[in-house]
Structure formats: structure tokens, C-alpha cells
Length: 422
Image (cartoon, rainbow, N blue to C red; front, side):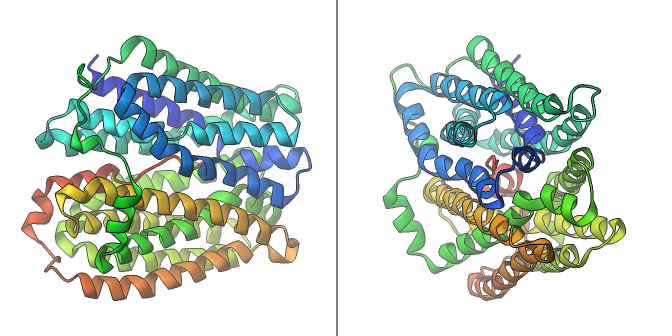
């Protein structure tokens, strides 16, 4: 088994574990009568700690090697799931989520590993495998979680079992790191430019360019709006639709399937034909429509339509923002720019996990509030996108030949800026 396939397998196994848990975490927390504010903090703890730990793990992997950092972070993820599955105390669960977040930079280290072992001309294809792993994980994980919570065991263990299975998946990924993954860094410790991690100097340089800063802001706003759905979807389905945990998990799987279909295949045909600017605008406009439909949904037909539109909108907007961003960024600055984007999107998730759950907790008459807020955020993103796209220019449009051939663009479309957002 090649090192590339091993690291992709590690990402897939890890994603399966986290996507089993994501739809169930709010319901799991509610089972122990935590407030909506506490649930929001439980969701936000991961990105908060990931924001701090990600660059640190990247630097440590540059100094000490990818393999030991991946091993330690994967062990932390497995331990956090085990604690969540066995604990009943809020403080302990919060610490487990913080541990998971501190371990959550491992996906960035995995991407750096691929940069180490892949020739530049093949890097886009290799990073695309990471994107495929994300797509498969986001579809299969929720489906498996929905099956696990329906097993004929005691009610208490029905909600705990998915967390323990997630811990088992993370442990399997840890064993793959230990026994199947060779070190990718040179023995003499030389640092390759492609693997450099984000620095404050890189952030300052990124934000000094109006074009780049504008696109980073658009990308962060897209994630800010989408985080309202990620953080409240399970509780919303229970309170508005009366759906149980397993049906909520299948709802997540449907959303993941739509988004994976768009990002994993259709986007490659749409970008050369229509150009990234038009797809960014269309994707954000679809998000607005989808969030409004979610806010108004009283039955499953409109709900499924809303999920479909949101999945299409997110699948169009997120990768095309990254693709256009790569076009306006010099090759030497790609790492700093995408590191800044990743940090901005992580901060956005943390913010709206807290805010959306606070809005949801205002009462039964406010169950739509998170999605009205998300629609407003998407509206701001659309206005900014129209201004930024007009400013970028560059002749980037329909059928631009270098768009189809650009190595950087294809890697950004396949896997750029993705991170686990638990």
C-alpha cells in the first residue's frame, strides 16, 4: 500500500468517525439537559482549539516529522471520543471537545504529507483524493450513525454507542499511522517550501491585498452562514419536525451527498463553462434561498427542497471561492493565503455555533431564527462577492483555458481549505 493511499485511508477513517458523531452531538447533549448555550459552547470548543493548535501542529510536523505529529493528534481524537461516549458531566465533555480540537490540525498535517510525497505535476490529483475522502465520509458517516442509534439496546447506550464506534475508527487510523505510514520528511530535516505553515507575517501580507482579502472575507461569510445549519440542524429537526435522532442523521447524509456530488464531480464541468465568478454568485444566491426555505419549512417536502438547495449552494460557492482565490495569489504565497482562509473559516464556525444555538434557545417560536440569521449573513456575502468579483477582473470567465489546466486551481477546487468542523 503506497504512503499516499495510507494517508488518504487515515483521513477517510477519521472522517467516518467524526461524521458519525456530528449529527448526534446536540441531541446527546440535550439528553443530559444541557442548555442551548452549553450545547453551542460544546460545538464551538472544537474550532476554537483547532484555531490555536492547527498552526502549532504544522510547525511541529515541520520540525519533528509528519508521522509523530499525526500519531499524537490521532490518539488525542480517539481519546476524546472515548471520553464523550462514557461521560455524563458537562465539564468533562467540554474538555473532551477541546482535546479533539487541539488534535484537529491533523488534516493540515495530512495535506502537508501529500505535498511531501507527491510531485508538483501530480499534486492536484493527489489532493483530490483527500476531497473524495471527505465526500465519502460525509455521506457514509451520518448513515452509519443513524443505523447505530436504532440498534435494540438500552436507550442510554443508543446515544453513546456512536461515540464509541467513532473512537474505534480513530484508533484504527492511529494504528495505520503507527504501522503503515512511513515518515515523509527528509532525514536531514530540510524544510520544503510547500509545507510551510501559516505565520502572522503571512496573514498580514494576505490582508494587504484588497482582492485576496475580499475573497477571504467572502469565503468566511459563506462558512459563517453554513455553520448555523451545522450547529443546529439536529435540534431544529426535532423541535420543528418532530424527527428522531436517526432521521436527523439521514438528513445530514442527504446534505453531504448533494454537496459531495457538486464538489466532487459537477464543479469541474461547470467552472470551465461558466467561470468561477458567476458560480460564486449563483452559489451564494442559492444559499439565501435555501436558508429562507429552511426558516419557513413546516413539512418534509419543503425541508428536503431547502436541504437540496443549500447543498447545491454550498457545493458551488465554497470550492469556487477557493479556486478564484488561488488565481489571484502568487504561487509563493499560496500556503499563507489558504492558511489565512482556513483560520478565518474556523473562526466563523466557532462564532456561529455559539450564536445559532443561542438563537435557537430563545424558545419554540424562534426555531427559525438561526436560518433567518444565516440568510442575512449570506446576503452580506452576496453583496461583497458582487463587489469583489467585479474588482478581481483578470479575464476569468467562461471557458478560460488556463482555468482547466492550472495545477493550483484544480488542487484548490478538489481539497483546498477543507477542515474538520466538528
